[in-house]
Image (tube, rainbow, N blue to C red; front, side, top):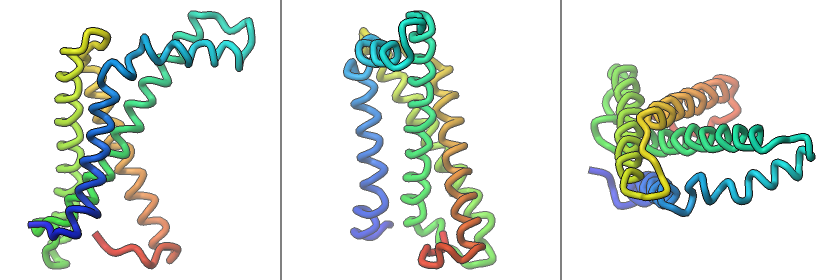
Length: 167
């Protein structure tokens, strides 16, 4: 069981991020609403030769990039939160297995949340639920966590982040 401190420092950020994703899945950040300011901004930024079709395509890419990014952050926050559980604080000889399991569980939880988020969107008239978005979200979670852990390990090896605790 996580301590009270771990709940606030490790679990609360993940829950708050999930809440932001949930809010973003409402009508507030639907394509119809975001295109109202993204498309005109792109046309202003890139000039008159930037057609509406090109603007719509770039808007689409920005939205999918948002999926990748929000779930990359979620996976890192879930990975941190899972580190506070007893199952992931075993003896040093068990560390490779526990770290692999922690990584996989963080990805699985992000994927499950992505699926539930798409299910939520199926009830919003201006949104559509898409299994492709679940895949994009899951890939984002995996890439984000791989980049985070890889970068952290490189910095640790170079003694740049000696203050980071293991796990």
